[in-house]
Image (tube, rainbow, N blue to C red; front, top):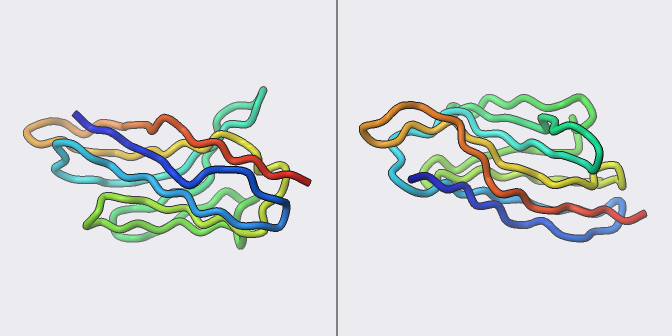
Length: 120
């Protein structure tokens, strides 16, 4: 009933930039918090940044000043602008959103993930 589709990943050199997008679609009544997580090989999934429906943001310490999260509520889309990328940013990036479907309850949904690879 709800899908999150990420795009924008790819291969970039260290110091470069990428912009990820994640669009939610389906029988959506309301989208609350949206977030980006990432999972590197052999590591646990970790929060990168989150944003409330009102635009309040939160970042992991390692991303402060380099990454910027934003959203377009009219499009049910969240973005992650990543600048000054480092090889240690290499991971699969996942979109996450708390969504209430029409005539339904609030649930957490995940995207399928998009690979970001930063070469040194």
